[in-house]
Image 1: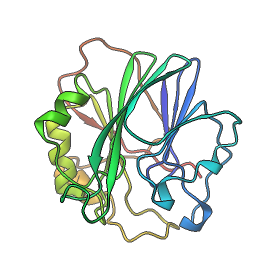
Image 2: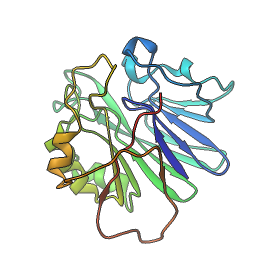
Image 3: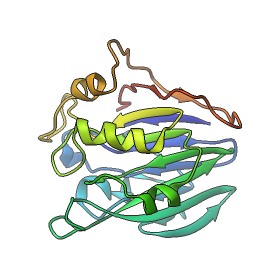
Image 4: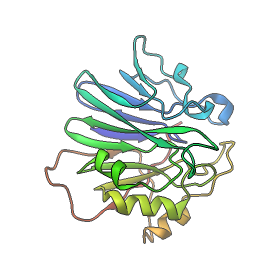
Length: 215
């Protein structure tokens, strides 16, 4: 399966038989999504820049907007309740972490997670996590230091940063450089897509993969 990033928290996860789009955003963000088609659309929380499902043009796409377990065309989606802040949602409400299995590859999309993960959530996510999609730009979600803490708690094969400042986007977020420093990455060249195959036990060391936004 392959992973492409369209900016903010929006990814396309493309498997052999089906495709997922996560957290699509509207043109008002200042950057514009390309034409997107998907069998499944996940929405981590109902804030405008994460819930513009109209961006996906496929009629009949299955929309997942909260916790639960679903299966569509061989893709398993497991939604886990979390929060958009460190006060159990008092300030910003809830956030859904999505664990998706595509072609036996397990991808965890953290949405706009605003807190470290407790043991219960880590256990619910389970192992292995092949690809972790993690917000790193701060604002009302994880900053670089907290994001690195979450990465360490899940020990994924690959970690892909998201929800950070990129040219053209109307957001007040930090750039990705602080997160890379937290992870001990001295050089990272953005790539167009991440291709991941099932590997059984997975690798022992987490690798950071920087994607360039496809707009």
